[in-house]
Amino acid sequence: MMSPMSADALLEMLEMDEIYSEAARVLLEHPPFIVLTGAGMSVESGLPPFRGPGGIWERFDPEEYGHIDTFRKDPERAWVLLGEMLSGTLSFSPNEGHRVIARLEEKGLAGPVVTQNIDGYHGIAGSRDVLEIHGNIRNIICPSCGRTEYISSRLPDDWSVKCSCGSYRRPDIVLFGEPLKEGAISRAWEAASSGMDMLIVGTSGIVMPASQLPFLVRASGGSIVEINPHDSTFSNTISDVFIRERAVKGLTMLEGFLEDRSHGSPRGFK
Image (tube, rainbow, N blue to C red; front, top):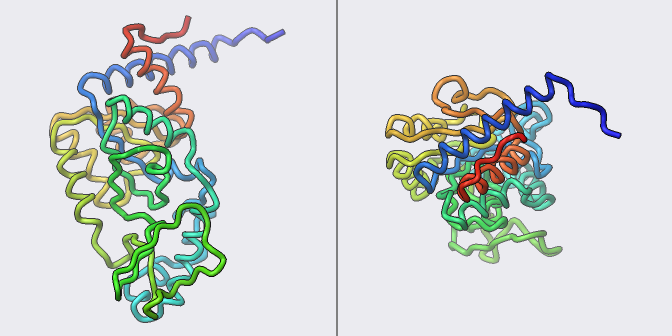
C-alpha cells in the first residue's frame, strides 16, 4: 500500500505541473523554436564532461593538448587528448533526451538544434537540422589531402591517426586557437535574431559566443524556456520559464505537456 503524499510533496507536484504547462504554452505560441544544448545533454548518456570535477580537462590541459598549434607541431601529443575524446564518445550513445528533441523536430515544433557538443548524438538520434558549432568528432579529416572518414560506432582494428598520404589526420572539431564553424554559427545567429523562441537544455552559459545566442533571442523578441539542474547565466536574467531538472527527465516531461497542449487538453495534476 502506498503511503499518503505529504502536503509539501503535493505542493511541489502542483508547482512543477504549472511550470511545465507554462513552458509548453510559451513554446507552442510560435513554433518551431530553436533548441540550444550543452554538456548536460551528453553527460546523461554517460559521457564525462570536459570541465569540472572528473572532467577530461583535469588530466589534460586543453590549452596545451587541444590547441591547433600543438597539433601542427606535435600531432602525437595532440592525439593523446583527441584519442581520449574520440574513444569516450564512441563508448556511449544518444539518450532519451536526444530522441525527444528529434521527435519534436519531426513534428515541426523544434529546429534548428544548435549544439555545443561534438559527439554527434543529436544526428544519430534522428535530428536533421543540427548546427554543430564546435564540429563533430566523428568526422575525421586529413588537412593535407582532404580525405574524410566518418566513424559511426567503433574504430576499426587497423585504424590509424595517419592518413594514407602520410600526414596526420584530425577530428573536424574546433581546437583551441581556431574559429567556430562559420556555416553553423552564421545560421545560429540568423535563427536567434529572427524572433524565434528558444529551448535551452544543459548548458551553463559560460562558453562564448554560444552563450550570447539566448540574449540575441531575447533582444529579437523571442521567449526562452530553460531546462537545467542548476542556475545558469540565463536562469535569473532572461529565461521566461526555468525548469530545474536534468535534461532527460525535463525533456521527457516537457514532451508530454507539449503533446497534451497541442491536442487542446492542457495537462495538469488531477
